[in-house]
Image (cartoon, rainbow, N blue to C red; front, side):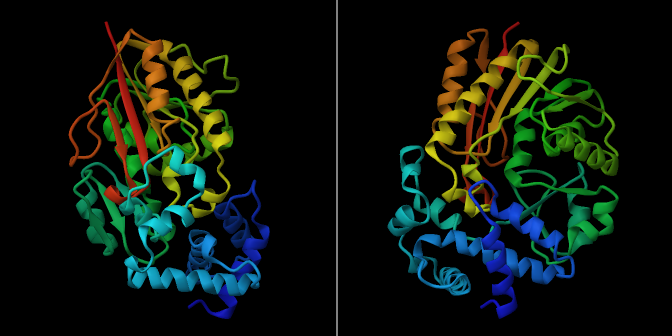
Length: 374
């Protein structure tokens, strides 16, 4: 059970959370203003806050924030000791909002998975996974992807020498599998159209052996600045950055061998890692984002070379943002043919991949691919 100091800190974080500020953002701001808190204390506060949102529907609203946090942590401990103490049927109506059942299946294994603590995944540089696992001591490989490691230790990874010298990135396994599905080849020209802070940009560049070029664009230039710092640390040089300032005007006239559209989405696939989002995401968000996703695909497809590939990825599992978008895009572009994708080494090739959290012990992800006919 958390001590009183942890409960008090967690209660102060809850007071700062609103519908437009996520729990992880509130935690980051709180820690910035409480720099004296050491990593073990920060972990305890974060775990307590996230347990609160995992078990929110079970909590007594009449209790004080500290008592509700205690109640949530007790539920967490009980579930950890015996996952069958809460029936899957109960989880389906209390662990997720009611509307989600109209947008996706809710298998029991999935519901149990999102009530667990999320795994922390690292991506080692190509061919260096085994060496990194030995040097970090608390890291284990997976059969799903080369160079992916699940970290089980407690040390501050950002302070390790291995991180400072660019030997690994912190990147969820599902995100790593997107780049493996894209399968870029050395010497090709790729575009990461919604690059954000560049996790997939750097992975694409690494898979290309620093040969060829990866263009990275995003409407938020601060994210691209972070990408540049990460690339410098990793000694990645085969990339170019271009801000995508207005939807109507593409950031470059370059034609590409491959385009990755890792589109903005509802993030339902991250509900294990970010349980607060379960209670702030709405069906209206899903509908709006599905329109954004289809528009993005239609905007970038003209930049494909003949024979080029386009990969669509979203860290969500809603039907509206996955198969519905892929169906609409396919119908609008007869010049494209479905592309067989292989993301995980444990899954067969298929034009559309749904990566479930309980199958990966990672985020949920949808990936689809097409190839432009020559």
